[in-house]
Length: 470
Image (cartoon, rainbow, N blue to C red; front, side, top):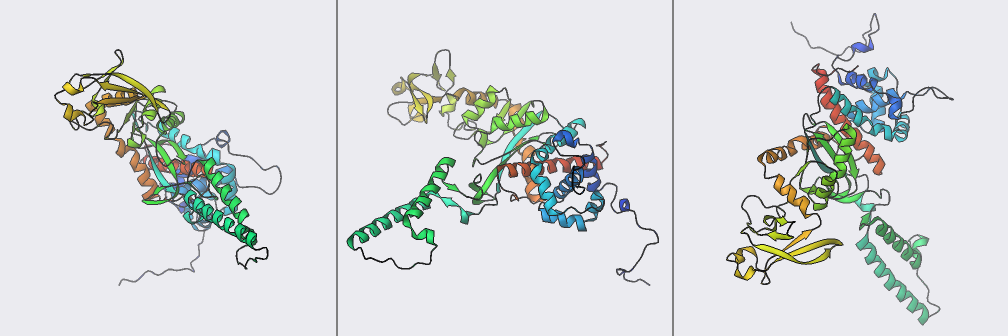
């Protein structure tokens, strides 16, 4: 006869159970413990050893194990970590029944942000030692993540200017009223005393405008001045641009950075340098999307000797036979200082000027009126002209490079190399909003998130006995 199994909460043990028996041998907590045990914490910059005075403190190894395992398990709040140390069996095993509170964990985070960022390099080194880094293809991309700052508490240039205009009008009216009648009395108001003085309010508004001018932005949140308004998960809000470089073999993250830029322009060479610094060597090729295709980006990467393949915008290089007389179809002949049109015509140098402070040269087709295909080429009655910026050759080199079918095949792999990193971070780990403030804080948290991505990949290899940690 079958029976239902009920919870027996009064059972006792003849012998106390061993803590080591409570979690399986392939549990992530054991992997995290092994990974942390391989680290030379002192060389990373963590403070180790006994405290000179006072009560004994928690070791850096113990607190680091807690943070790494909690990030691995989608726990990122310090109070959540404190609660997990008291209730989570795996963390009880990992800490040996020690229970650090959230203040202890916060002080450890505050004092070790630099060393915590250094964990990414260690995870990459472990992957490299086990042959899990290809170093053939790297891919770079970015994602926008919401900041702690709120739109409601932000200051905005347009609103400030509108308020300043109304305030100036109000001041003029009050001054005119005082001149007309010395005995004019101002009615009572429930606003704070400092706001009753219109000139004080004007100084406050002008001070806020100066802050916006210094930050070179039209919007700012005083509580988090590094954040900028950008589209995060389809919503315009204060956020940061989180960048990552991934290796093409199994997607190990080899470079990270967080910036306040709303776009990826100007970050290509910086991100490749970040990856080279982490790994210690250059990849055969680095892939990037259209956001990194500015001529200056391509030129900067080329000057540093980086091999790159970047998706170009349609207005820079139309695909196939689309727009046969597009400016990209006019190669530049440096020896003769001219451009050559698709049907063999010559465009000679006409004049030079500066576009937004950058030098440009204009080449003009003298035989435009006699050209049989002039109507296809340009509708300008003055004839066809080609404008070349100072970095035009970097763009041309990229266009020519992508004519190779092998290069196109490599570039097609960009999305499957780096975009899964963001999918893991946002969908699997559920990370869509920073839980810290300030550029240094989010730099540290992003490095930890990318380290967690690497640890998840290494854990899979470790569980399959493909990775051994001493």
